[in-house]
Length: 261
Image 1 (cartoon, one colour):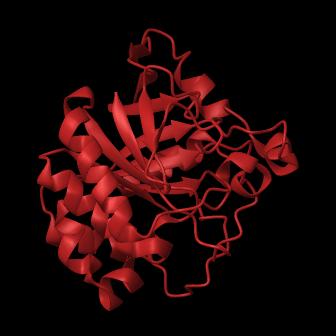
Image 2 (cartoon, rainbow, N blue to C red):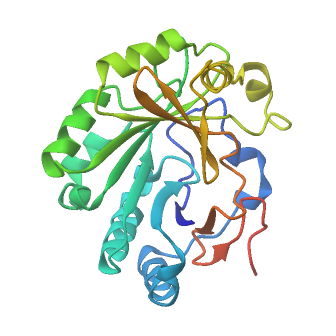
């Protein structure tokens, strides 16, 4: 089990992801503590509960680096408790944050850098970022320079346009990168997800003849062209997988839970 540290959302978000469900779900309308109070609450919680978790996963209710001071606070607090840290980001303003804030001095505290992207036809990050200078390869290069032993993972949200041809491209271009495929969730409340979500690659990988996929916890792991591909069919299902530390400094058991009084 891990602890997901959810960085408070920035209003308005600089990205325009068509699959965003934050703006349509009331439980994300939460009043965040200031960063100092929030960090104190996180420190105290981990002081008593860190043994419950394998790692912390820093994520956000939108792109976490829009609130970089919270990301730094989370990284420092996790390291103070000796915990493995994964950071999930689109990477869109990673270089900007590294160049303009103290984030640069804390990048080495990230054990796993998970770059989230949409599995579209051109393998682009489909959201529209205000940062025209964004370059995924430069983000990866900077991270590995500051943390040579760190792991880079591509977390790909599957769509109907994503095929094994695109997966082959990623495997050939980035031989050292781990890959996780995730199912887009929220089709009932998001028309774009309803129209575009698909699990064609995951389904194909898990039915390869003579190479059975294996269950590892909540994940399915498929062997494809000599590489392990991790498949997460239900990333928003938290039971037995994670708790969530949110912007109000309180811990939640799932994403559907309403803000605590």
